[in-house]
Image (cartoon, rainbow, N blue to C red; front, side):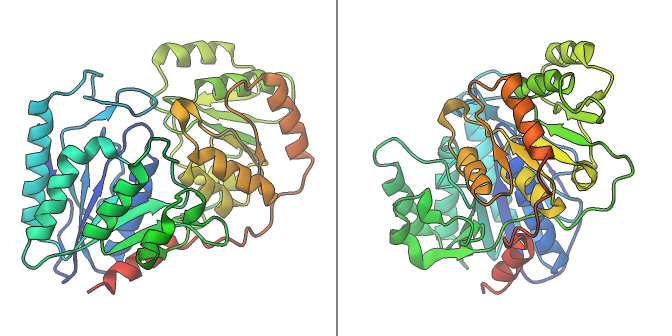
Length: 386
């Protein structure tokens, strides 16, 4: 059963209602949580509504947290919704979620509403987000409404989807917060109808963390698979590579909390002596600062950590289910000399071994010259929105 967990109270005038739904990994939740914390730091009263499986530490203790009955993606292609046990959710479940979301909105009585991803993505959540848009329109006073999106979008293949997005934005939203640097990538590169909403777009810079502290433990090569639900092949190839290249280096393989237990046990059994296999490291950003090389997928938050740490990087972008966003990011970083990119499909140990040799022979990347201050900038934009 859903619950409202009040973790902090504020008396500042600006009330922000922030909706975020993570379905597979935790990247959306991590970025939204970082923005919410920046808002709280600036004196805003922030309510963060989450609809995925709870993740320790997200959102932070400095905001009010509303937890909806959790749903996850029923497939890597995000084509359906399931409960935490993997069972498809029915109309009764979805109606209960919708009603709870609307109740939380009315209780919060916000001055500003931020919806993460929608309407560019999260179409599966229209059953509750379209009623929320109606409730916002009918509220008196009416709060300002923004969508919060990463810099690179999943490109739509179905006719009419982009036009539908433009219609919702023009009819309901006051602004589009694009969490990127236009000198790195512009929204029109992955959203062809950008000109139709150009008056609403605000670039914030990448929502990246501050420079982490020096690591208390050092590994030469750090391999990470995000949440782990789709990173098994990357971890397996890295484990095999560690027995053939950089054998005098310490390797840390972070498999992720969602890697199936049997897969994790099989990997642990095969790990050579220079490899430590773990599910999670809270100090991951610090580990990157002390590492010679990172091997990872190309998710938004991981790349932000890499750019802040100035670590050499091999990126293997997630492409299952027709995903394109990570490939665009990896290719752009490779073009700028900030990473090497390898394909997820058909990844072999030989390919990874060659990439490790190449990466370690190159100097560490210098200043990326990319705006990484997106959290503070977003807070400033929303704080000045009334």
